[in-house]
Length: 254
View 1 (cartoon, helix red, strand yellow):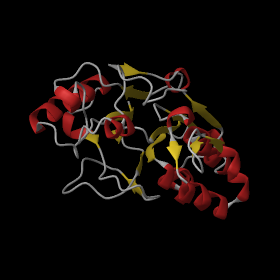
View 2 (cartoon, rainbow, N blue to C red; view 1 turned 45 degrees about the horizontal axis):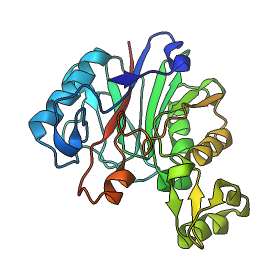
View 3 (cartoon, rainbow, N blue to C red; view 1 turned 180 degrees about the vertical axis):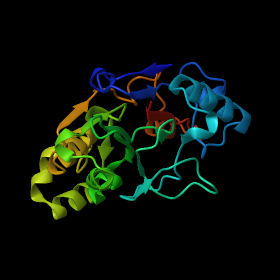
């Protein structure tokens, strides 16, 4: 049902989980632990799935907080459950106890952050657009404003599409090279002319390094290649399935 990071597990007073697609109530293409509020799955099944996740994290279902993710660098400071609609943003930070920050993903990179000494945590959804526009650095800056120190922050990247499954076209490649010619190192030739395989986890790792994070860990889990455990937007698209489930990665303070 979930995967934990050895490094995050070593942080006292912090609970976390990278939930897989196993152990839920959904069926069909959403089988079975779909936590995506934006999916077309049965809302009752989604609610039950999220309640199971909340119980594991020892918070109330209403206290498993998620965003309306838009592939941005925007960060929200969380003090409790949202009073209205979910904010449009892609990262959250908090110092509040018994609030679980949960980001959804299905190929993009879910990153959980912690400064155990300052008791500041964060969670970010980082696809290529978010990484490119600075969501990692923005999350670290928001944590600093709550008392964290970037050199103490541990960031763990959960299940993410790997370079061997992420083929991109020439316009994508040129956009990165136009920003910084050294970004060429994140691309390797693919079988199709003018296309390449993009290493999103390595690019996120670079952004963590640039942000001055003390420790960055890539768990090395590929969403596309592990259908039993993970949902994948790209795999669903290749199969013309119409929709896809979402994984939840969450972190909370005791």
